[in-house]
Amino acid sequence: MNITVIFGSQRLNGRSHEIENDIKSLNVNHHFDFIRMAEMNIQGCIACEKCSDTGSCILSENENDDFNKILQTCITNDILLIITPIYSPYPSRLTAFMERLLSISFFPYMKNEAVKPLLTKPTGIFCYGSAKIEDDKQLKILFQKCLMNKYSFYEIDYDYINNDKEPNKNYKNVNEYVIKTIKSIET
Image 1 (tube, rainbow, N blue to C red):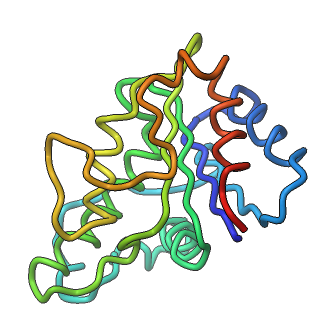
Image 2 (image 1 turned 180 degrees about the horizontal axis):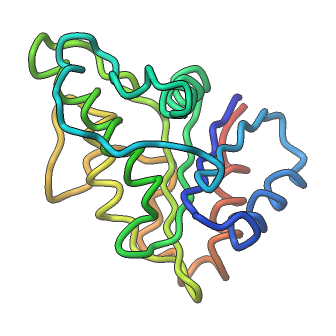
């Protein structure tokens, strides 16, 4: 399996770095593409809705913008993992990526029922704070708009690959939660 791992953190040497090292030390038959949002350049969505006609974002024409590179990796690989700290609420580069992904998933689909680029993509979303695994419900509800044609604005309707309702009781930290989820993925 080829797995895209997006680290939402703005920091390069914090918890996300620890998790990446833990993943790299695994003895699994998966290939990982690590995307560190701290290294990416992504402009926020300008809500021009031009993607409704083209199916792609016009901002990606800028050679300094990494949105298309990230999106192509997500599309090409078999599984997507998003691992992010909770700030207020999410790190700005991850938020910019999500805004643009939601636009190119929503507007073309609404106008001409174009296929969403990540429709039915197996996905795991992990949120953490300084001391514990944080509630991932809101981010999962937001992201399922990219993964489904019919979704709820209130409930998680998508079968995410990580769906533990009480991860703080079952794992000592987010690192362990991510690692055990990866180990559970069938090859």
